[in-house]
Image (cartoon, rainbow, N blue to C red; front, side):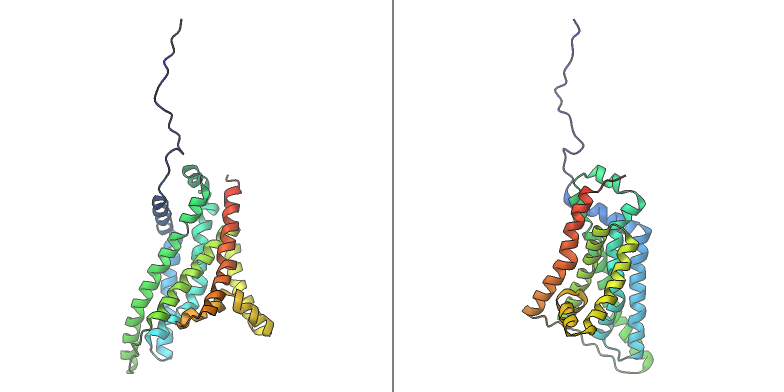
Length: 258
């Protein structure tokens, strides 16, 4: 009679141990900043923003607040692109299968990917605020004019919030489309389209005042957002951040990974 030894050690499943969410955030942040795309895009964003800030200070009145705000001309385009690439890079490089094999619950991966671009945005904003004071001092001394050191905390806080909204809109759009070139083209063309809609007619201006993030968030940049302004901002965020992110997350969960 052949005896069979039965092991009493319970089988350990790969997915039986939950990966802490903070570890997913740490991994996604490392992947973002360790890749050439993440590093270069962050550096390019800062360099271009500093360039336009310096030009504004040199040719216009050197004011700290004005120099900080003018950086939005660069950030409004590059921050959504940063958010898009943070999501789509794995799909374009074919590494999503490895990520989902280690963490099959894809919604957690989508949620973790929200953090790296926000962290990069916060670092970028901090650098630009510090650089703004240096630019004002240097330009004022070079031009022999008085520097305006007036700093508006409320407007600067609003500027930071707007930048976070922009980068999250890029993450949401990237999650929805899962194709970097198509998503970036959509960002650029939609910004142009909203500009045309806003000036086309009274109706177009009214629509833009509720749905265009670039229009609704203006009150935050002024540091004077009212309840009505916050309602408009909430609706535009729902349309351009929450809904695309939810639909995109569903798409990511159902999409076949090869």
